[in-house]
Image (tube, rainbow, N blue to C red; front, side):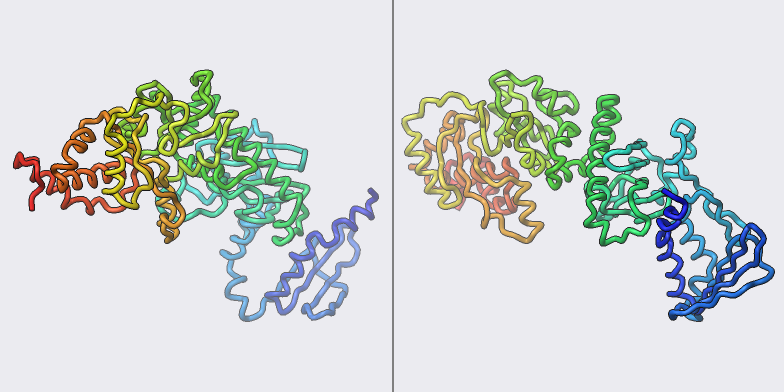
Length: 502
């Protein structure tokens, strides 16, 4: 490319910035003195379509631009504080010093353009706090350079913490987009998926033109390539860090795991590459474990990965849904956050293994059908009559060991919670529950014995065991609804009577 072609290519690259000065100025004057010592010139315009050029005297070598502000703009744009803020925001990392009232303004270096081995931790901390407007210390950093599919220089930091967990609302993206050290878009929402908004730092790409508009960015195939390349690299980096230091990854996941789970729910492109980053407790692990480790411990004939939503481990281990899995020694993930069932439902299959919620399916762990008691059909029909249309079926259970009954095929507690958040009635969308009863349990046997000769007491017990099943499933709407019944049963038990109080 010739020198003339190069000059032509530069035309318009910075023109928008210069001509925007007329938005606040009543007149702009440019003084220019050539290095060769020829006559200096003065260019003057009020921005209304005409300009004048004349020789000038007393002009120092170089170029000086004088902006005469309109009266209404003087107070704001003649402020040194405003000028300094604009310089630091958009031009802090240019290669030459910028001086304001005799003091340098752009003092923070563009360390992403330096030799990474020569950048100190102190420089990283200063840069992180400047670029992220933060006061904490970063947990980790990714320094990434690439030439294909697009030119990328990225320096990204994992913060020490984030504000969303404190109820501060969804935070803005934390990564800014640069081109040749010039800011293109602060806190850019285009260059990374929304679920990576916790990261702070910069991305600099020489392939992006300096005069790109925000509208063009949203539709640019270049930006989409940049997004894909960066996201893929970040996921790989997180995976490598997890293998290198599992404890450090667990600390990261405890703080930022919700963002990764959001990615699984919202980002189909990267969903399955995020699964190895998940960490959950399980029935066969002292701490947390991974999907790969779970699969490595599975029997050869097991085709499903099982999980159980619960508030905590103690309640998970007490759950009636876990009884048969515990008896057979089948591993189950225990998941505690409301978002977890949605996350695992979105995964569906991992490495050819179906991911199954044991509240809704007993999968391959079901016992062979037990021989039915001769009173089973009649009892189940009676119990169905007592509960009415609250259940669609009552049948004997093959999954229970220590509990009298359990609900199956019900909407999960997480699903119902989501319906509430959206002011929707979960009953409009879900299925009616089925109730499975453990015919070997003492309560069920006794209930069968008294259902004919003590019908009022039997009705109260039937209602209570059903509510207990709702509690076990985590879907009882209001526990206060059963207080009067419980009090009645307690009075009957304490009086030593078989009949409920009148």
